[in-house]
Amino acid sequence: MSTDNRSGNNFWSRTYHNNNNITKCSAAEIAQTIQNNFNKHILLIYEDLETFREAYARIVQSIFNNSNADEGLILLLPYLESAETAMLYLQENGVDVSSARRTGNLTVIDSVKWFLTSKTDPNRLLEDMISVTKAQNRKGATIIRDLGCFFLGEKVNELIGMEISFPQPTRGVLTTICCIHGGDFERFNAQQKDALIEHHQCVLYVTNAVNIIFEEALAQSLDEAMKVFGKHISDIVIRHIQAEHPNQAELIGGNPSVLSDALNTALDSGSRIVERRILRSLYKKMGMSIPEIDSSNKDFHQKFAEARELFQRTKAQRLKQ
Amino acid sequence: MSGSYHEKVPLIFIVDDDMHYLTSLAKTLARIRAHVKVFIDPAAVLEEMMVSSEVVFLLIADTRMPKMTGFELITAVKKISPLTKTLLISDFEIDRVIHSNNTARPYADGLLSKKLDNIVEFLHKSFSLQQQYREESKL
Image (cartoon, rainbow over all chains, first blue to last red; front, side):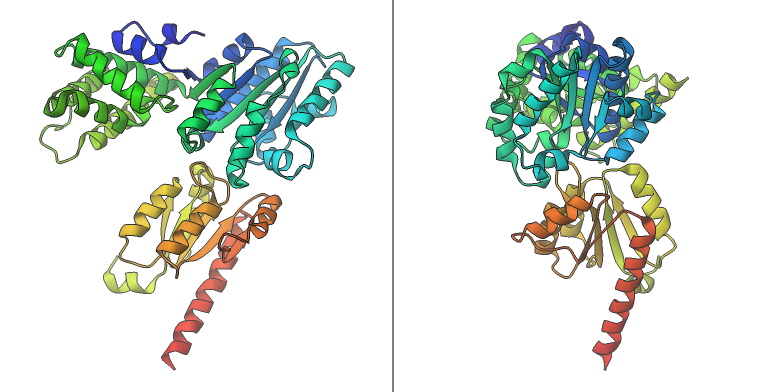
């Protein structure tokens, strides 16, 4: 999946998304994206637990559906939920967990136990897994590991060290999907983010389909709203965002202050015009009349959050129908 | 809710990133005579505590949350509101070991599994202790 195709054809989408190191995709697209990056070291930043659940369920389903029995080996290391809850979720989503565990195709272990209480170096454990994969003549193995546990153990430096020293030889056999909640990713400092992004071959931000649609609607609205100021000003806004938030994982829609700050920097009081136009355009795209946005005392963030929530509710209902 | 009633019932904050569990716990605690506020974001708890005119009697926090772990949250809460009792909840036995091994952080007043009955029992005990303390203070 390429970012360009997903992000539409308007100037804002093309410029903003193409200059970011992080590819945004929906949980529904994740299986195909992972298949395209088979045997790679992947960083997957997820928006929330529900999105992560959908993502790992789709990855597991796709591996089991696309390989003959005993060909694929999967190790799932959850953090924000128990191994039992993860297995239950997989079972509810069409994975025959009992059978997969019996044949050794699926193993689910709490990531805290795997990373924080094991006396063996986690990278050494990877090499052991490769040996098992080869010894059993399997096609390959996939590890889905949640790295959030390093915050619980207050071992963030160890996490960065582990990722930097990720063993090269494993890359031919293993697909290693290093997962982290977006809220935890934002806890890393700029150097740590850079190191993580640099030492993964593919970096994904996974959100739900509705938020991706919202982001596209926002990009179109921004494009329309900025037209009055021309391409030069639009460039300044984008450059400001990229300079101030070089590796921001969150979508702009999820963090409107980033956009608001950039608009203020570029346009000063003119930013209010763009903000109003964005809101009008968003409501228009929902096919709804605009609430009293000009006369209310709410600031842009609040009005934007309301528009986003309404958009999500409306779109989610339409997607269900 | 009147002011006088409000003064008598304890204020309880609950924070958990799992919305389903949070809803179940809030429903269970609705049976208890307390003013319960729920949060999905640990940072929002701190913001609320900063501006709250009322002392939070008890904070119930999940150990494993994004943005801020339960351990980090209670450390911050103890600085803002030392009188607030703290209860960590977790489905993981290993979290208890991590909590007890970290001597640099303040300990929570309790660490329980996320079973709803356990939490209700803890609350009843806390309330009776609170009542006992009040009565002894009057003597």
